[in-house]
Amino acid sequence: MQEFKLDRKFITLMKGGLVVFVVFLALGLALPFLPDEENGNPNGTIVTTIMCTVVFGFFTIFTWLTLRKLPYADVVIDDDGIWYKHLGKDQGLVAWENIYKVKERAYLQCLDILGVNGDKLLRVEYQLNGFETLRNTLNEKISKEGSEFKRSSFSKGPLYHIFYLVSVVGFSALGLYVGTNDNPLLGYGAMSVLVIFIIYEYFVTATGIRLANNSFEITYPVAKRNIPLSGIEDIQITDEFHKGNRIPEVWVISKMAKKPFKLKQLGVDSNILYNVLRKATRK
Image (cartoon, rainbow, N blue to C red; front, top):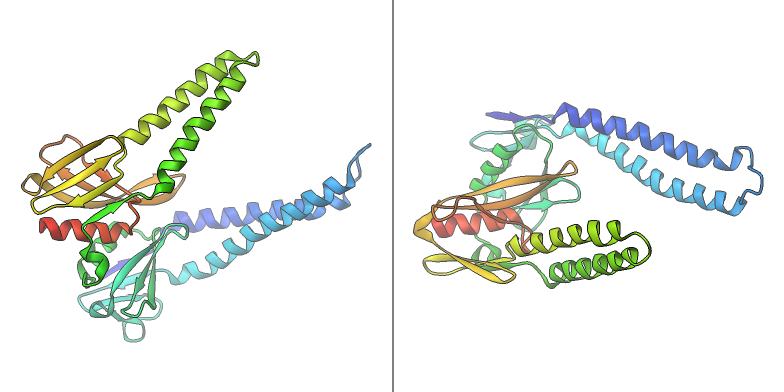
């Protein structure tokens, strides 16, 4: 039996966030009652109050509701299944054979454990201590019988390419505008560096993978890499952290390359991609 408890630092962070949101909400609500400035704009004050109420009110309620659920987030696993710690095994057990798949919830930073009919059986928070170990166990236990596990190709959608194209064109135009208006260092210098970075990031990021009989074909915007299955050492699911958020990605570790091939956001849940690739390599 193994327990996975919520990271206490995360609870402290959420409580601090709640205090900050409440303070800003109170300040927004108090604006109409503060002394007016000379030549002040009453309509502007009202608009600011409404915006503060909506934005900070939403975050206050969301954070408060999240905090209410956190004491019940700890989970326990054993050979029979998984359950919420506060319910106990007798009342809360979800047997391994009843788990159909694991679904990522990127914005909520959690995994939903689903049954055969798509019903949510349990929720696993990303902030649990030992989350990586728990995720690996879940991936070992799920059935892998659905149609999504039989796919042979995965790729980023057209919006991904459009986003990068718009970014390059937009920042290039902004650089030209700023550079021709008495600020060439910022316009031609800083914006050029930013555009070069965006283009570089686009070309070195894998945009798809296709499973062949004896190899993986990993695609990039202007190149392809063919990786023989015999040369693959391991398939791993790991995480990139961005502004405190956990972003899962799948690594293909090959003898032919010094660095792993990193696959993320290929139009499918990372757990599904991970299991499909492991099945293909029998890792």
